[in-house]
Length: 130
Image (cartoon, rainbow, N blue to C red; front, side, top):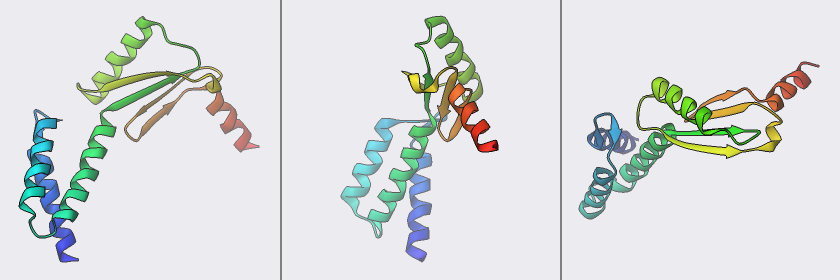
């Protein structure tokens, strides 16, 4: 148990060292993984496993997926980009997807935050209330 806690502490410290100006630096991440794999400190597999989890969570939190029933016009896409960048900060990656199953409206997912303004979600809430 103690070694697992130490592995988590070490992974968090390594993760913090990979951040530059609040964003994750891919080059530093690769270098950290290479050095830990070569050095093989005690519990290095635990350290790398937890480090991988931290990096994955960070990457997911910097990805915005926008689904709409119809393809969005470039002006609307630019407005959504600007609004989300203002809320979540710079460095977001955007993915615009066409999903006819939404019937109408938009669903936005940034990390674990989901904003669902689709007709499909409204119908599901209405159905659940009966």
